Amino acid sequence: MPFKIIVYDNFFPYDDSECDVLGVRESYEDAVAYCKSIVDENLTGYYKDGISTDELYDHYKSFGEDPSIHPIPDGEELFSAWNYAKERCSEICKENTKSSTLKMKFVKHSLSGLKENPRLAKKADQAVKNHIEQLNKSIDADEAYDKKHKINKYREPEGPMKKLPQPSTLLLKAAQFSALKHRDQRRKDIESSPYINHPITVAHIIADIGGIEDPEILAAALLHDTIEDTKTKPSELEEMFGETIRRYVEEMTDDKALTKEIRKQKQIEHAPHLSVGATLIKLGDKISNVSDITQSPPVDWDIERRTQYLDWAEAVINNCQKVNTALEQHFSEVLSNGRKRIKNES
Image 1 (cartoon, rainbow, N blue to C red):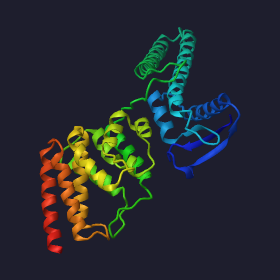
Image 2: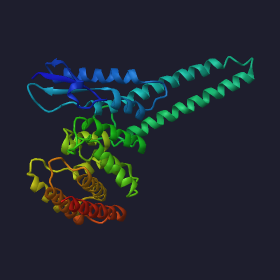
Image 3: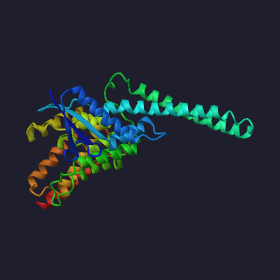
């Protein structure tokens, strides 16, 4: 069976306009070998002395090429470049660190000839000791990384790696990802506002009004419509952002295979069973939508339809568990103001 090799630029994940078909291999083994060579070339090109395993992997995931293997004529992706890259980042950093250690030990041996200048020799010897100590710490850190993420050079990592970036990095990454996924979408208001305004508003509401600082909840707020309204897969979210964020986004996702009326009813029914994180996002989402329906509704929505939306949003939130008084009170205020404004317009 022949296999087609496609390479994506990780800076534009799964954007078909940013991918290339590199050719066809007659066997899966040949296809895997070729894909691995692409990843290796990327990683060795990005490697610099002193870079950590995490830093190298982050750089690859942001800017590297992501080859995948697909059976011909059609079939699911068979090769995970990201899983292979995790393993190779660790190996590359170890190999280069150990090589540097050997070089420094050789230099230390050469410095033993400085006996005629004891002060200089002592100073140089201490500098070498300090450098070797730092290198050994780097080796220990890489070994701890391997153990934490269950990386073994004889097998693939077990399960997705949960990255733990700094909160600001996570939020910027989520914002960028969401912006790329929603880049061709618009809201239905008269201005056709960029869709990305909505998830940013939701995250801002739960942070500013609700006082939420949990970076995973805020990142999930930025991403909450990506599965439902774009081609994003749950596995892609988990690979990029971890299991917790993926779960929050899935809780916020309606089944588009169902009719709109059934989807709306299921939101009411499922509301009591949402996690705390998803409930916070749901509050922010409904606050944002009620505000938009009140102030800048879709151009084809009449008074009756806007009123029905407010009633439905209220039913959803009333069925949610109580998790944040400030957000719940703000929703009530926005809902009340919305009803007054719509009534005045009728």
